[in-house]
Length: 109
Image (tube, rainbow, N blue to C red; front, side, top):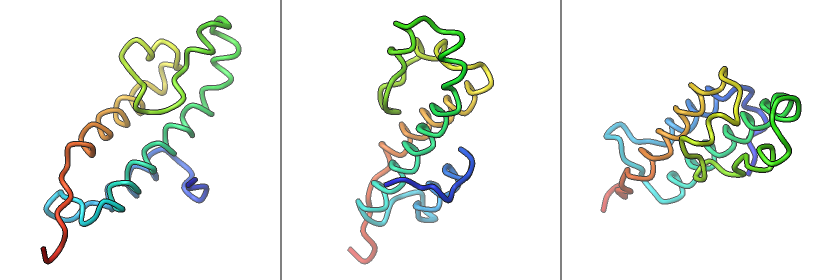
């Protein structure tokens, strides 16, 4: 699912955090899945914004080395992105890791 109405990476992050309950858990697996999809959509937006830099500054091999999904990002991939995007990329990777570790606690169960 793509979230085309969200214009910035920060908009995606804010919407993903809204999937959390006040006690920092997910109410259902669907909420966790939606939050992860929002983070992946934010990464897609970042990757698209990085396209010009990748074409003009990276070798052909490096250009093909850019990970397709957020879960594939490692420290070695940061050099493939413009420095302006490093902060957002770190936030997305950290949030993905955090969300992955957050438990699903069904309300009323």
